Image (cartoon, rainbow, N blue to C red; front, side, top):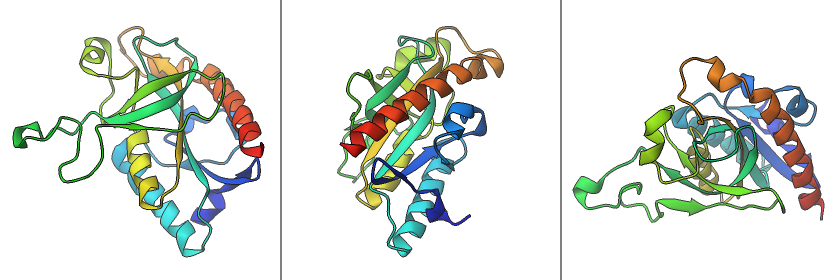
Length: 209
């Protein structure tokens, strides 16, 4: 499959959907979209989305919108609920020893927290933090955001190269209790699959308007 074949027409707009991993891609989403599966983590996501968009650009078939969707962790938000990301930050980067604000990339004109589109009326929004680690337990206390994932900031940076807007949709899979094994992440994924599919139906209505 060519990279630009992942771009779909939703509500009359060309949209690239990006997801990290197959366990998040349940039957409800399978009935609606064919996402670009990037792999887990910011490096895999950044490479995959940048490559796909470059291939689309070479064919003059860039999408109008990219949607990053999947699961997220949160110690404060409702477990199993779906949220729009109102902003995204990169928690891994820290060049404060050189005088730069923690969370900002040196010599890049970009704030530590970047606002995102929240186009779906009535769907709650929350601040998102991207990083390369799985967050659990007390580690949430050190993060200045409502929820955490491992891909969205990297997807944002790839989108910025092509001036394409990004929407982030995340379902809360874990965070209320400390993670101890793989099933702690996957238990709510069927619920999140249904919630994300419903959010995409509402997004299609927004894009059609």
